[in-house]
Length: 349
Image (cartoon, rainbow, N blue to C red):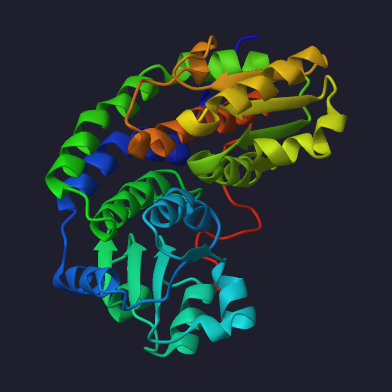
């Protein structure tokens, strides 16, 4: 199969290939503003009872690594979509709740509603790509990413949000920020290294995914960010059905769907559950299913990742999924990422 590249060589691809630059610029701009230092000090004193992590779409999924890290640090942290928070969990708003809100635009309908409902009751730490947005202006502390303009589907804004959230996490968990910055700097070249082979990746993935009608992305722990965002961007980019879930959830029912039309992409993830994820891969194959592993030890080149620190893993994990969005579009000769019904910023609840 000869993949037709002309249909996919548009603005969305340019955004994907701009990710190394976006990450480097975001890392260079990361600092610890006075507001963030003050909030971190209050957190250390036990001044907050709950940390609420909120966003929509890929911004919400990006919060998974931070959620787990804060819990591991001994904090009470919950993840809830902003649309649910502002209508069904209003009791959380108050001076004993710290809100971490992620929104690339900072002006989606849900974020505007959040600011109205909160009305300065809870301090807000914002991660956004838009400096003059309502969220950035209203936040008690704001970390601005440097992704720049993005055409449609979240790619560079997503990986930059992951990086900014790693910084916020490090501040709140009392890590050595100079070491954190150095580690992130060491791992950044892994993104360019993978993307340098994008044409070959798309070619091999297009062949691998022939006859596929349904995609499942499965993983555990921090990889839940990847599987959630992965399914979302496939649907947005390609109008193709995809579902993201935990590897454990896949065993509770969806495993019954295994057929030639199903493809399961398993993310190896980090150490605590890597063996369990690889066991699922083996079990899918044992049932005659089509599957591949994404990780450092993958046998399939387009799914093989460079060895990086666990703090950077979610950033490199999304790259093979981005290649899948290109491969699916190339198969049918359509431009990936061009919205026909949705818009870049959701302005209606």
